[in-house]
Image (cartoon, rainbow, N blue to C red; front, side, top):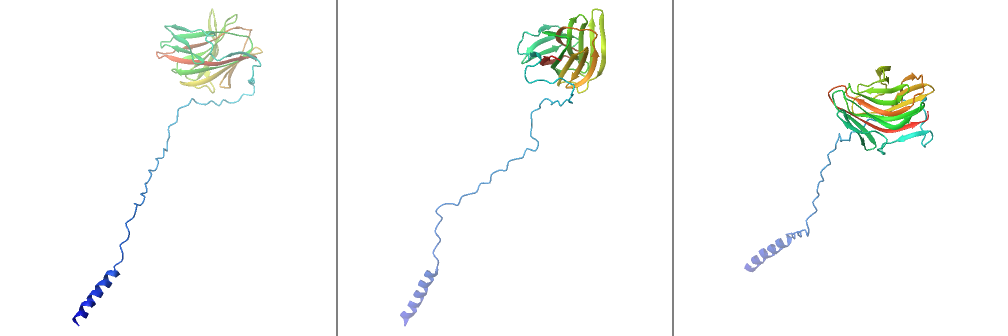
Length: 252
């Protein structure tokens, strides 16, 4: 009887051990950790390079049609040949060739600087040229010399950095204004400014255009012929610089 009481606890102990569940196996490798990528910051105001203003001149149906070939082309000067225009360095300033251009840098103090070319203008022609102001003040002026030292005198087309245009003739006896200062339509004032100047001489009449827009006409009472040039003049104590490029002269 005593042995039976010993057996019963032993049986209960064995049953209890069998009821304990087996331990779960250890994981063979760690679970992959997800890396959160940083979100890119949105640049709401990206920086962009400053470009020269794009001109959209008002079309003028009376203007000559520019041909893509050399038809009617008398002169095409893109300032790669450095023998066509005068260069100088004086107390007034410096005129020198640049990349596909010639620049006139005029010292302050009401100085005058010009450069004549080897291009002879006939009585009738259509001319286009870029006159860009890189540095100037409102009182400064610049422009074209037409028919230099012809029998009728030297004609000069002036523009100023305030946005005006005028036309004059220089004779040995003095200078006369043919067209007084007036507001230049479509003319970009100040600096930097980019302007394409056109001069159309035909049938005894000269017409001036700026960026494709007619400014005025003037009746010619002679048949002048002479050199083409450019000119610049400071009106105050500050220097000025203009850049001349892309010249084309065609039959009218």
